[in-house]
Length: 291
Ligand SMILES: O=P(O)(O)O[C@H]1O[C@H](CO)[C@@H](O)[C@H]1O
Ligand SMILES: O=c1cc[nH]c(=O)[nH]1
Image (cartoon, rainbow, N blue to C red):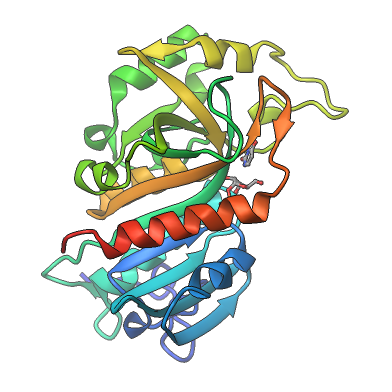
């Protein structure tokens, strides 16, 4: 079926609406980062940069790292942007832009998020790494899609009940890609459950001037366990990436460096270096991932 001009929106040069990319611009392995400035921090380790484009907060570079073609793209902040980035990346590989039809053979991308986060457990020190085994979304994004079969409904319902959460704002839970995820875990990485929320302040239990509705929310999250697993960290993209990647047939892993330890009230003294260590770690893991 032909997809209408209002749904699959292409720019005059044939590129996809927000990302401004043509199908040939992206590699099958895509690194997503929140901060547009982090894209060139990643590609500073590349042997060659083939392509650079920027529109709004979406800055993309494609190039080669140890002989492998990789795309690095910034998503900006939040799962509203993840909806755009994941749908448009998927369209670039799985929709024929000339015919406006879905291609017969689907392409699966490897998607690796290199992000920053706040730990909710005291024992997870600032500057350490977390690989998200599960992303739990409090942002509602996945509820707009038919997605029950890719969600961990039991975990979401258990946590919703534990927090006596408003049913209209029910969380969703989606697992990482097991193969890709396992490859990124080693002795220096905490494996955890990441809570993705719709904001940095109130939704992550931060108070500057605006008082919180539930002042105990972070303590409750810190104390919650499901099948002996704790919620480890809070950020703003992982669950959306896991949900849409799984729904669209892509493989995703979210790796985050801990900049804040919330219960201890600590923040990294050198966030740029901490992010750089995670970048180098992830690039080595990508280079050694069997294809
Ligand atoms: O560093 P990035 O990848 O942007 O990730 C985290 O940092 C931002 C908030 O400071 C949010 O996007 C959060 O998820
Ligand atoms: O506490 C933090 C740190 C980074 N990013 C977040 O979303 N939260």
